[in-house]
Image (tube, rainbow, N blue to C red; front, top):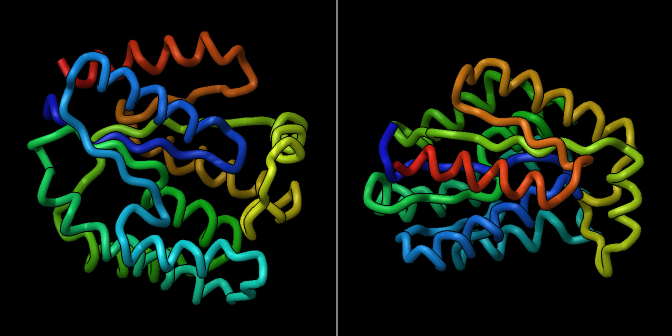
Length: 204
């Protein structure tokens, strides 16, 4: 693995992934380690426009439209990612696994269609390591209630999020040594230490 890997943080709503990736960004800044950070959907001017469409509470897209919008957002980002590939550490908040977990396992979109789209968009761009953040339904709902603003993807049923999380777990089983499951039901400080320790191993 390159010492400038592509590292993705995945997980359902309120699983702690965005908080942990921000902690890693702070760690890199403190250590003066070059990196770029990207969130999905979003991350670039055009992708942020698409993000607003996807997450708008008034949007009512069908599952295929959602897939194409997420893919369009990723397509807008890929040139930026390839520009820094192997030159800087790349941190991504959600990527391909999210699309498979939500669109395939959650909504039932054909997996082969998702793979075909990504074969065109990504070409030879690959993920080196994934942190999958998991959370139980009780903690997820409790954290959702504390959010000031909820978007369209914050308002699905508990059963939907359970399906998506089970999908994530199926995905990472095929990653062998290229993933770490982070149990966000545990103490935040403990998980932060686990993640930073693994990050250090990845960039040595």
